[in-house]
Length: 637
Image (cartoon, rainbow, N blue to C red):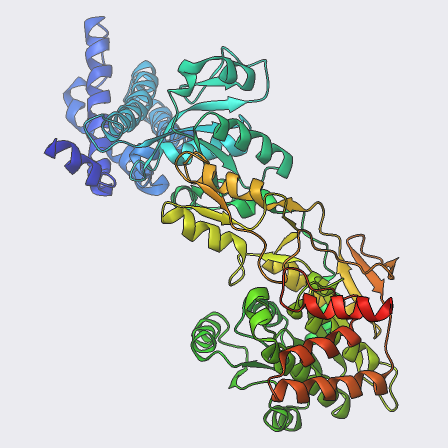
């Protein structure tokens, strides 16, 4: 047992050892060649100089071994490339020896070596050197996969193409990692009896019918280059048969060791991803080169990703504002390390503080403002509506007015699908902010292009459902869902931020950009798949509890209001929503009133004014439903 682990700890045979083994093989090959000819009673030339002749053969071969470095490869990773190096080395030595032999024949009347000896030596030496490598490789493979060492996960690689073979080779050649190749899975039906890298290829139908096959694998390994449909099919097949699903990068792009290190459990985000939106990188870059950029909420999920993307566009300065001290400090450490040539300024500030924010505008004369700062958690805002007014409305009002005052070229606001037909204070406050920003577009003396982007839930963002479910699953459950029929749209953080940058580039002012987010996802299905991906059975290992809709929550989100019209753009996934507008004087007066009510902590008055600003705001599962009943009673007299 101890000896096996010592062998496993030996990463490779030292190069000097391989060099001396190759020399020994050459010497041994010469001896075999002469012994073979001696057994046939072949008379040799210049027998009295036999030792010198053997020495000259060895020296010539050593010179070419050093030249081609046949000893430099890692033996247990030997491939056809190593065989070619041996072939070139021995072939070159043979040519030199044949040349010397020809010259000696002319000078001495007969050649020093018999030609059959040289050719016999050539074939024997090549065979023995490569045979030594194959035996060593097999030896390592046997010991690395010994049953006496800690068990490895038996993986079935999906596919039999070049990328799959490269991935399988990466597993075979890196036995230090906890994976063992157990076979291949293929959708093709013409390879049932074929073998690949010494392992069987199992057809998908064959796999489903034979329970014994399932006992041979612990996990199914898919590649990150698969289409979403392929990934869905193989994931369903694996999970339905109690197997783990692993995902790996493509082996042909990066080193084998890095490929195996990159193998990880499949995440739910991998299955929810859609083809990325096509972004006009050069156009986006030209808008940011040598510009001074402000990003509010810069330490949040969306804001920080906007900063990371803008940092690659050669801006002259990126000013990052956030009121969360620790996340801002952590982002500072990350960005200074990752983008050493980009100038940053990190500002701890509250966007509802007008004088504090104006100092930044006065000092830096921003070209673009990305406004991602907001309070977003629906239940918390429902209990603390005044805070949403201060930040989501008041903060946006400050930034928008300052952008106009200081002639910022573009103001891009990050909004949410919860602003559409809102049922909660958070969504209504964001809709009010949208209305204020849009109202400034045609206000007197305005030169700023005010642009709004609106999208759904972001995968992996702070406080979103997926990290929440992960924590619940890690604790052993239960996973809590508000309602069995609740659905949501999802997009990735980078995708959301690319939309923001693209919208800022293509917008002419006053638009609300919405994104075609595909089909909505049922949260119950999401939870069940996450549980399965974690290796558990929903309802058995991990329970699912329905706890009822939270205050202000609705079953489904929308991206467009009932009264809006959608205008296509040159991006098939990006549309413009034409929503009802308000005149600047009207929204300004109402915003002043609601901010005053927020200062007085008058929650009912806050929401009452909010419902005037946003007439489609109908509270759901909330204490503020009473205001809707009062309005309905007044309407019907």
